[in-house]
Length: 192
Image (cartoon, rainbow, N blue to C red; front, side):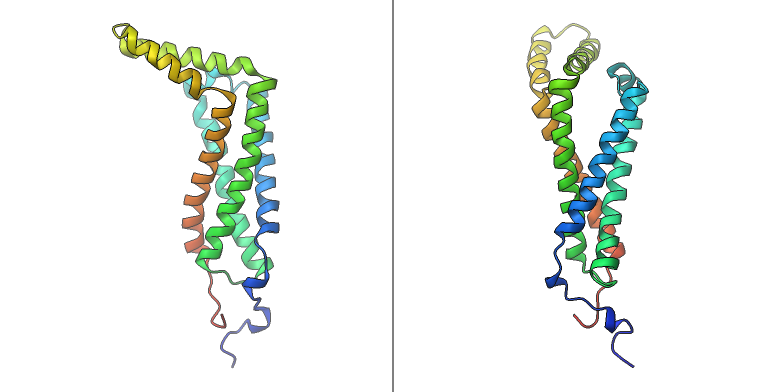
C-alpha cells in the first residue's frame, strides 16, 4: 500500500499558480457584488433613507455573503481542481486573500465610478443624513464639534474614500474568512 491513497493525483503546489483561480473567483465575486448592488439600487434598498432605516443590514448581508462564498469556493476549487485534492493552510490563505483582493479592487473601481459619475447626488444625501443624525445626537449643543464633524464627513464620504473603504473592507473580511476556511479546507499530502 502506498503512503498516500491518492498518490497519482499529487501535484507539486510550487508548479501551480494561484493567480488563475484567484482571478476567476475574484472577478466573478466582483460581478456578483456589482449585479446585486444594482438590484438593491433598482429596488430602492440602496437609497440613503432606506440604508439609514435598516436597509444597510441587507447590503451588509449581500457583501459578506458574497465574500464568504467567493473565498471558500476559490480555496476549494484550487485544492480540488488545481492541486489534486491537497492544499496547505498557507496556500489556502493565499488564494483566498488574493481572490478577495481582486474582488475588492474591481468593486472599488465600480464604487468610485458609481459615486463620482453615475449617482454623485447619493453621497450628498448620505452626508446630509449623517449630519442630521449627529446633530440630533449632540442636541445642537456642540456647534463647533458639528462643524469639525462636517469637514470629516466631507472627506470620508468622497468617491475616492468610498472606493478605499470598499477595497479595505473586502480584503479584510476576505482575509478573516480565508483564515477560517483555510483551517477547515486544508488537506496536506503526506508526499509533500
